[in-house]
Amino acid sequence: MALAKVYVNYKKSILNPEAEAVHKALKRLGYGDIEDVKLGKYFELTIADGKSKAEIDKEINEICDKLLANYNMENYHYEIVETEAAQ
Image 1: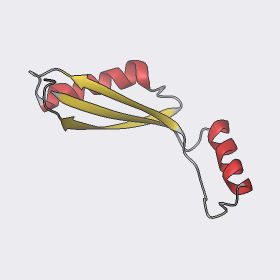
Image 2: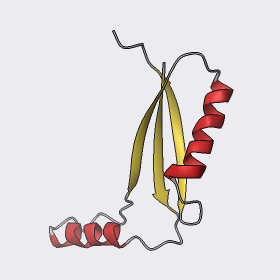
Image 3: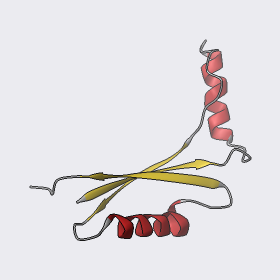
């Protein structure tokens, strides 16, 4: 089995008010050394055995493009981790 860890974040040009609110709150709490906050989404997709790395990459990219990330506003990246089958 494989585990795809998918990270989706806003593009730099997109205002993220929720991240800005967290950043301001951190400043109010005395964490003035924090220069920026990024807020995004994280997904874990478990993939059954039987697919090659290339097939998994293709499938994950399709899933991200079609569902998980809005290509107008967000970027994504992912990592594939091999896991053991559940006992």
